[in-house]
Image 1 (cartoon, one colour):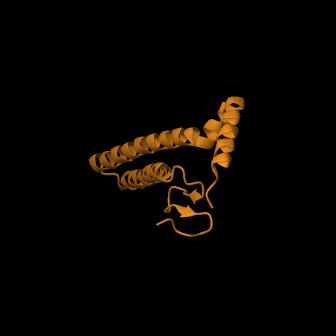
Image 2 (tube, rainbow, N blue to C red; image 1 turned 45 degrees about the vertical axis):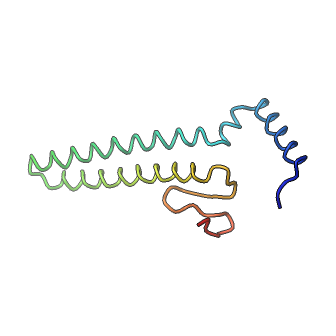
Image 3 (spheres, one colour; image 1 turned 90 degrees about the vertical axis):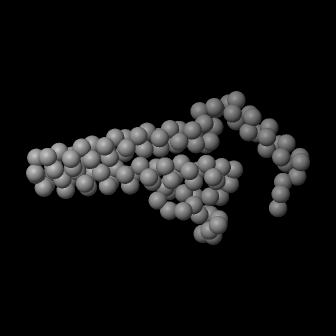
Length: 118
């Protein structure tokens, strides 16, 4: 059931009062800090993927199999984390304004009641 004009006006006033009283809390609710943390996590994961690739290339040059295996595991893990962070950011952007959408970066967004939004 949609809100009436009066209810929308009261809600907007409450949001403005909350933003004036505690801007840090409002920034957290809007996801700015979460987005920043996700971007940092993705950047570190990309760096990890580059380090893993360097380990694989170093292993090929020095003919040390164990280093190649470790480098491959580091590269795949970092790439997975990076893609999960990117997907979580994209899902959050797509569902902006939808209050009942949940995403964890690894699964498709879903509604709190278990129903798929698609």
